[in-house]
Length: 161
Image (cartoon, rainbow, N blue to C red):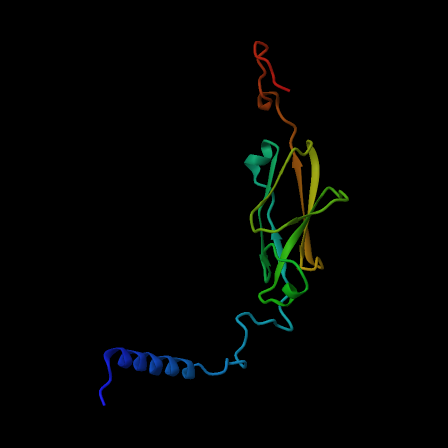
């Protein structure tokens, strides 16, 4: 009995397919997840630096910071609390203001438009459910602008509202 080339190809594909399907076993359910939730981790620390001097002299506050044992990311919710390494975000409050905003990146905090004088910024590391884990306060003085720092307005030019 001879096999036609078409039948031989069909037979070869059938054997290949069966071998591939049978080679796939049951998924390994005992392997650990890619990220393990840990029962205990070192508490996070927050290190904030004084505002950069040059921008501060112009009234622009740039606060650089870093965290240890926590990654600042825009992740929220109960499930994210179980991720290790720990995820979180910053709560930022200026001058005991009742409002607070969430800073969700590792970029510096930039404030513009503060009045000249003494100010303080409260930085709090919060977990994804907003539980405060640690905090620090940065105090600084926004200097009075000198007359040379004030933009010159030419009377010959109209100022748009």
